[in-house]
Image: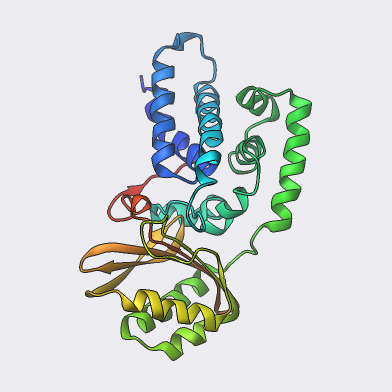
Length: 289
């Protein structure tokens, strides 16, 4: 007989990550869920999947409230921790959209309970009574929260992108960056492109988003072009989307994801905080709904 925790472990990690945007914290939530599951009389549990998700949701909510205080003192923009994902995540359009950097940034604008309710309902399809038990609210209250969170997200949800367009622009961007072709870099960026960079106070990064192609180019040339050493690049799947990894003397320095619309980059997300790059160097994560 299979162990329900093992069977649903990838689901639990995915739920926690969508609530926390941090793989390290999601792993801690999964571990805490296992410890509590081990204490339960499992023969009395009618729906192990829903029960395990309820435990994970409550642990994630507790952690979200702690993280809110930690992020108040974070240096510069805070970006989600990038995850190397398997090709099947990109094939699941809804899952890929929900874990994309752009979407996770939208979810960051919800309060913890709103985010939990939205994720459980819209991404994982749980029913309202199950969600109510997970967030410790009444079913009518959860319905109201779901409606409010849904309208909030819908007003900010990034427009759908065409994966083939992203891959094509990514290839041009990477070739131009590797060859130092500044004109091609300029051409692939939209005039109103916005760049977010996250160094966490440990690596040089912009302290606020940079708006406009000229300013973004000046930052890229002035900061990343100044690093001494041999820069190499490769492409990978990150959070269900094509992405670029920049290595400096063989050490991962940046994970960059691009949002592409009408054949041009409209948003750039550059993660340089080394604490957020440990998994993006080698570990491929299995996500599940």
